[in-house]
Length: 140
Image (cartoon, rainbow, N blue to C red; front, side, top):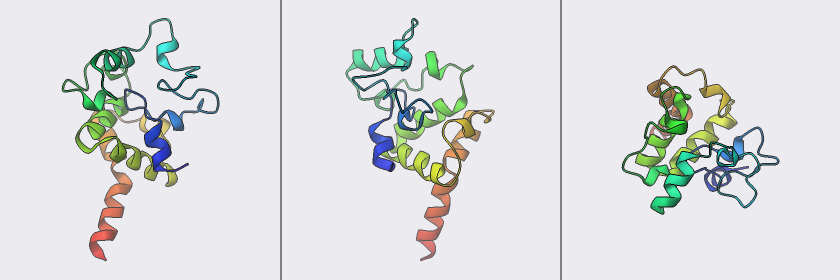
């Protein structure tokens, strides 16, 4: 798996479906076989429905993101709001790169992020290894 694989498997909400524990049989909400994707649940997925209705690739293309609905509700893990802001302002490939870089350094998505108390802490964790790489590039 590489950064591009993570990018190509971002859900509408910015979740990295490729790194989900169930990825071996559920290919995510954008696939033709979304076995466990949130929109397959009885309550559905607000983000998927909204993005499809607006004709956008993901919440990162929405002026209102992150909204306070479904996975972006304040009682949901802060990592999802932090991730969508990252993708919104840096693009989905930047988000995928951060998640992938952290993943190969042992910061496993999404579990490692669930302990973050707020969006800022989740964003700092997302940025962990990007700062190290930027520092190395600037010093060379």
